[in-house]
Length: 434
Image (tube, rainbow, N blue to C red; front, side, top):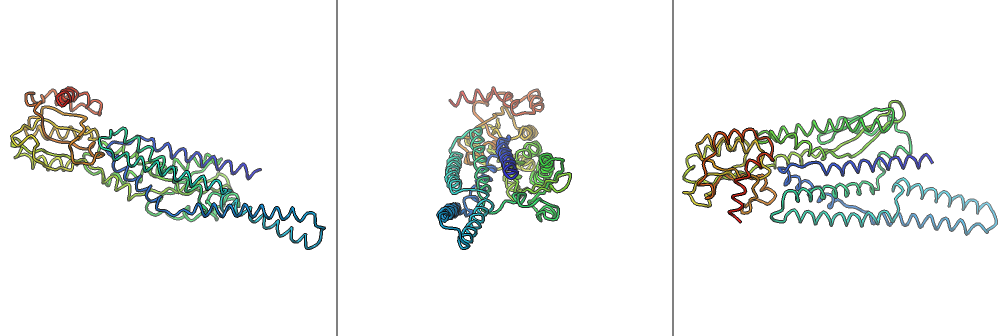
């Protein structure tokens, strides 16, 4: 009975951890990280697909073990009518030992799993993989709104997490925390990762408490603090340009879900109870996500700004944009009078662009936000971070932005405010294009 209660308790802990990691997939994701986050989960999924899994072989072994117990049990039953002799007692004794050994092997090495549970895991893994493949394909559809992309990413995240948990739950290696059922964890029997300093990409957190749940909670809080600090250092190293300043906090909250629990251990031999968690952080991938977060800016060169393009390029590159210069689609004699801004471009970056244009004496007349770039050569998912300096015939008759307009822009601090600020220009341009 105590062992059954412990199994139930540990199962509850696992379920709680799985639910928590699933909830992490619902964390708000900045538009600016959509492409790089998609790349991250696709990489995780491809790695999982590439790992060899002998679930069918394991299921067959379990089936053989079950048959062995049945056959041995039937043999004992068949021996019952035979008169008791020393030989019969020896045979029954040996069979009893074999039944006990076979049952113990199944209950420990395979964590009490059965042939049926492994078959169900095989089918579930195939179903999850099929769902991930469909969602990944859907993210490549042209003209996909960012909200739909976020929904697909949430599904992909949850399915990748489910696949990882399925692999862990059906591992044929004895899980570290099941040592608890064999012997009480003591300080001198703790795994090496508890006492040794963790290497790069690994974090060990610890917590104490009068109960196991309290110690676990304190260890999780310690882990959150350490992961936050580690990711903060990665963000500071990669997000060094002014354009990133307003993104750091939002990005850090989103990347926290990439700290994954790999192992746990606890010491119940003394009070207070101590609980340790080993987290893995793919620092290379996170740095790749951060460094891959780009804000492309296109300057459509015209006669009006030809002698100012170099200055615009230098200042906006220094701010953090990835600048390219192209020939204006409306021709070199057209007027540069507007900027077209994707919904992922930070508000501060919009303000900076306007300030640079105004300082260069360029007659800016309209800010178009949020704009969907249908004719851009950029991949669909990167267009939300795009900004273009160009113009439209519609705005040639408009007055340039006044000091009052610029003051209002300066006070804007949110995307919603910027949307409202740009509403008149957006509505008229949409009406013209339709």
